[in-house]
Amino acid sequence: MGDTGSVRRLERPSILEPRQEPTPMPRLALYALTVCALAVVAAVVSFVQGYWLGVVWVLLAGLSSNMAWYYLRRAKAERDARAATG
Image (cartoon, rainbow, N blue to C red; front, side):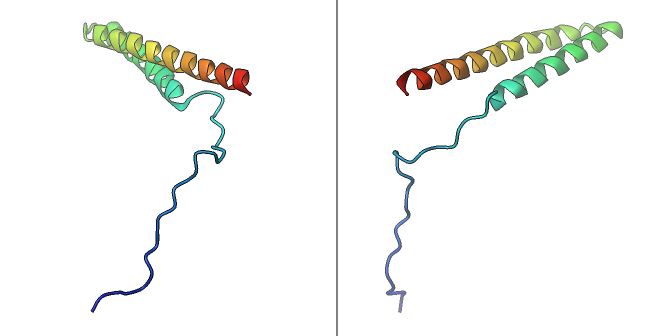
């Protein structure tokens, strides 16, 4: 009626196995910097054309720059912690 073969167990990676090394600059920080640059360009274009919608772009640039700063600092702290523990 049914399959009576052996049951396969899914293997999970061990906690002790080495993980892939992180990239030198976190990807999220790079994305946030890109969004920040694009938002600044959009704000400048918006203000030059006379639209006050540029204020929203300035706010988005501020938010994304704070995100980039946060992710860079977090990566540095993790790297320093790994170096300290060996």
